[in-house]
Structures are given as C-alpha cells and as structure tokens.
Image (tube, rainbow, N blue to C red; front, top):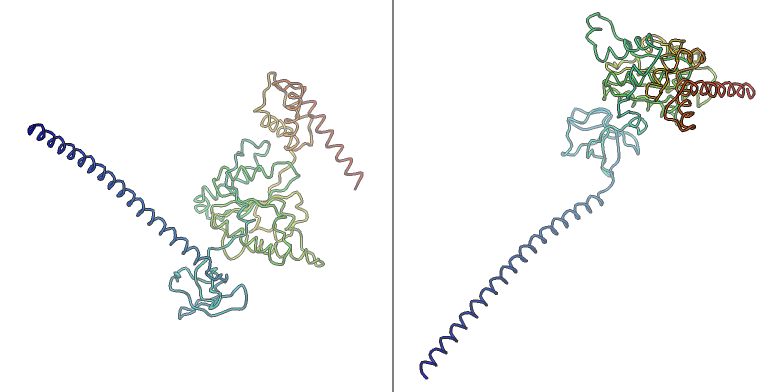
Length: 401
C-alpha cells in the first residue's frame, strides 16, 4: 500500500510539472502577442502624431494671411526695396531674412505681406497661357522631301534660318550677320506652313507657332504684352523659330484715321517691330511669317533688319505639280501605273493643297467601290470633282460680291 501511495504522489507531481510547463508556454506566447501588439500600437501612435503634425502645418498654412503680388522697381543701397503693389502705389519696404537677396532685381515679381508689405518671397516670371501654349512640344514630322516644286525657295529659307542655327561659324568666317526673319508670301495652299514645319524639323529648334489674330486683344496694352512675352519665351528656349501665320492681321499699314481697335493693333505692331530690331539682340531666335496679302503690310515691317528676305511661294509649275502628285500618292496602293504628267497637265493653276485633296478624293473613289487600290480613272474623276467644286465656289463668290 505504501508503495502504491508513493507511485501516486510521483504521478501527481509529474502532472503538476506538465501543467506548469504548459501554462508557462501559454503565458510566454501571450507575452509575445502583447509585445507585438505594443510595438504595433507604438508605431500607429507615431504615424498618427506625424499625421496630426502635418494637418496642423496645413491648417496654419491655410490660416496664413494672403500675400500681395508686387514688382520690384528699385534696389536701394541700404538693402531696402522699392516695390509696386498690385493694389496701390510704390512703397519702400524691407525683405524677410528667408528671402535670397541675390534673386531680387529690378523687375522681379515678389510676394508681399498684406499688412507690412514686406517682401516674403520671390515669384517666378509669369507668361501668358496663350504664349506658353504656342510652343510646339512634339517636333513636326514634315521634311523637305514632303514639299514639291519649291527647291529654290527652300534653299533661300535654309540659308536664312537653318544655317544660322546649325552652322553659325560660316557667317562668322565670312563676316556677315545672318538674316533675322523670312517672310513667306503667296496664295493660300501653296505650302507656306509646311515649309515652316520642315525647317523646325531639320533644325531641332524650339518651334513656337502663333496666328497673327491671336495677338489682337481687347484691352489696351495686352497685345503688346503678349508680343513681349512671346520673344521672352523664345530667348529662354533658344535656339527658337517663331512662326507667325497670317501676319497681315496685325501688320497692316498704319492709317492716320483709325478707330480705338485699330490703334490697339498698331500698338501690337510697334511692339513687334521693336522686338525684331530693337536694342536686345535676337541671337538664336529666327522669325518666319506667312501671309497671302503682302500688299497691305506696313513698310516698317518689310524693311531690311526685320524681314531681310521675302520669299514668294508661287502656284506650282507643271513639273512642281507632277512632283507633288508623286509625293502625296507615294503611300497609296496602286496596282497599275499612273501617269502623273497627264494629271499635272489637267490641273493647271492648282495649288499643293488642291493636289493633296485630289489624291484623297481618288482614294475615296476606290473605297466607295470597295477596291483596295487606286487607278488612273479614280484620279481623273477626283480632278473633275475637286476642280468643279472650286469653279462653283468662285462663281458663288462672284454672285454675292
């Protein structure tokens, strides 16, 4: 009996040891779980503290009083500044210690404290959205090979615009100044805009395109400001080509008797004249303009020093028309040969735009008849349609003239 009791006590002790060991393992796992949760909560508290700090900073920024935009008129010897506020006259003010004084110069745009008018920061120069949007980011894909019948004109333009940008050392060796601008004149549809695009393609220069009518603004001085900012952008992005299409809308001859709108156009023209041949050199900025009304342009715009070369883009000749037909049809599917000389002979007086329209219309005839290739008959029918529509339009214009 005693031996049985001793064995029972040993079993009980072993069970208690196993229980205590199991309980100890459970408590250790619970401690690990609590420690993990503690680390997570500490990290979450730090994240929330950073978020609170960010929100407080954003709230303080939103509560900060608005700043007034001004312009530096003069920098005094004692470090103070003469600024013109957008809300009033000129003021003599101090600049905050956080402002970099080497960036403060006459003409700088600055932010002013609303109460003390102290300079709180320097603002970047502002350009009108119309000017910034006029920059062509994607380089034009048109090349000289896409232009037919204008080899002499292309040569003159390359000598005036492309070579000064790419091979300026030639002009320095010879000792002459390259032309500043080229004026393209000719009927609509002869390729003036295509030539400007091809020059931009081959020079790898910044291409800024504006229509002359976009520079005509409603309020006094706005058009001149646009011209000034246009050339400012061109100088910053140099080498640059500025292409002004339909320049006759702002470059017409100035008259003694004029309305207020005419006088505003004349102010824009005078600013353009000053930018093209003023005290500030254009250097790597070239100007190409186009018009189909050269007879109404102001003489000051046409004189040497502004538009040094006037290049006439004429109606294409017989050889030119044949070449243009080949250019616009080289991507078309044609299973039988097409006599382009015959087509050129039938389209006397047509422009490059007319010939492109004829090629497109020939393709439309093939599509209409569900064919995958264009024939000579399609071109002939296209000529009859396009030329007939032009004659009808001319008759209509004469009827309502």
